[in-house]
Length: 272
Image (cartoon, rainbow, N blue to C red):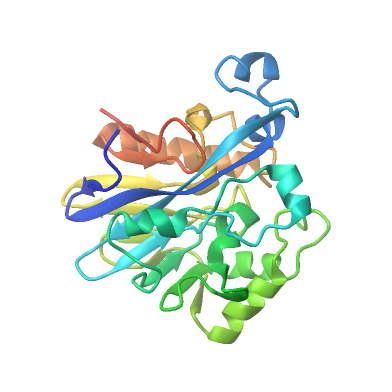
């Protein structure tokens, strides 16, 4: 594994896997249709049948910008949520410091989607007051995802539970809604893929002939490399599988890198 403080070069773009901590979620939900008799061979569970989810975020550095992908759970979790998810300490800011950055240095925060474990860190508590964790950053997400997060229906309420945070972000004006694919820079492109949620997007990095993807929950564990395995949270497994096949084909052909956002053993896979 590459030292997270050194980063991983994708052409002239430098990428740093950055941990925001861990949490525990239902193993069956994470592995979807894969029977426990199979996944228990490579995943450990606790007494509640939960497996550990890493919160592997990604810090991307271009010539003049610091771009953070996702924010983790954050530090505002309720006592009820602590019992359900057993989260670790929110360590994102500590780990950013290891690569020489503080919360004011982030220029863009890209949210793959707005489920609590990806967007909970948009707002943090500092000195008993809620503030934007990254006050100088523009937060970028899909319009579809924003609307669902602000007005979740009965199906989506468990995953989107922080209206007050989104209101604070909205009042600040530090956000940008996009519809579909978007070029953040010549090397970094956002692709609307749906599958996991209606507004899920992934990050494609291409520079000097090299390529990498941060696919969010489209491929969040190494076991999800199989086209038929996805989480039970996916709203459309068919869309997830289609996207997965496409990007894995490209990564294998071009010997690219796939960053894994929830795998506790690997932060990335390099295809050779």
